[in-house]
Image 1 (cartoon, rainbow, N blue to C red):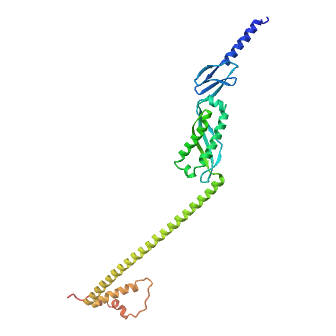
Image 2 (cartoon, rainbow, N blue to C red):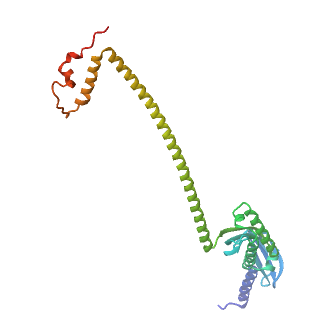
Length: 296
């Protein structure tokens, strides 16, 4: 059965209505903000989340982020106030706070990133050109970063953007300068090490000389005391020998002979060729001579 014209018309009408309905509504999430355009002219700005209406085929919608966005700048070489060169990488955190200015100034996120990157690079060269490596390595670094953020934010304000923060993620010396600095640092450390070794050797020699002097003094004092003790012992021995000789000369001679026998005949391989009548052997031949004299 052929389809009637009225049914075809109804079907087309339904499709058109659906298309019009689909083109008449759009949604804005919590993290978005929208600009409604009519023939390129801004009609209104929708910052609140929800379902929104627009005239289909006449009005268009541009959506921008409400959230913080980040931007990384490519590495660039800057010259500091002390004529040192640094290769600097930086990143910025920004937010679109005025979508109308943003649309009028840059239209797209890519356009905004190009403008911000150019501004950030120029600011880095300007601010870092007035500082030194020592400042970048000290607590004053935070002040330098605040100055950079303020300048970048001033440049971004006409774009409807607020720059929340700017940070240097990496700051290195160029490779050629790094090798030169490394060589200087190595030479300086070697010089300091040589100086420390020389000072240590000098102190060691002083300590050794002092110890040698003290050792010499201690040995000399010990020898002096030993000589004194030895002399006193010899004196006492002499006195004892003298007393013994005075009391019984024959027994004293006998005692001295026994001591001589022990020293001369004590070895296992000692050999003597003596006459039996030798005076040296008289106490061996006549033991009765060793009898002590009767005490008085």
